[in-house]
Image 1 (tube, rainbow, N blue to C red):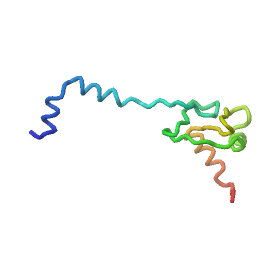
Image 2 (image 1 turned 180 degrees about the vertical axis):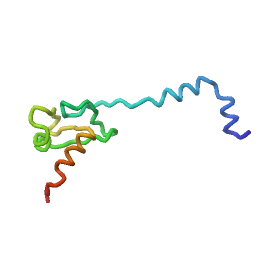
Image 3 (image 1 turned 45 degrees about the horizontal axis):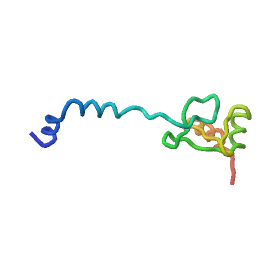
Image 4 (image 1 turned 45 degrees about the vertical axis):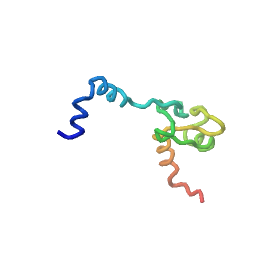
Length: 91
């Protein structure tokens, strides 16, 4: 019997249940700036920020919520914006 097996043998059952409870899904803090979207725009979830002008072009004036002149959006909204503006040359 190796050292890991011995450690598992002597580990109490309470310790095992705590390990399982820690693997909960993370909850976001900042909601997406697009009003129709229910996802979160936290950096850990892949959220980004866009300028007001870019967000208004994509979703319209009444469908976004702003913060300090920027709009925080989730990863899926950013990908849809990026796909729409992919062909635009801004050099």
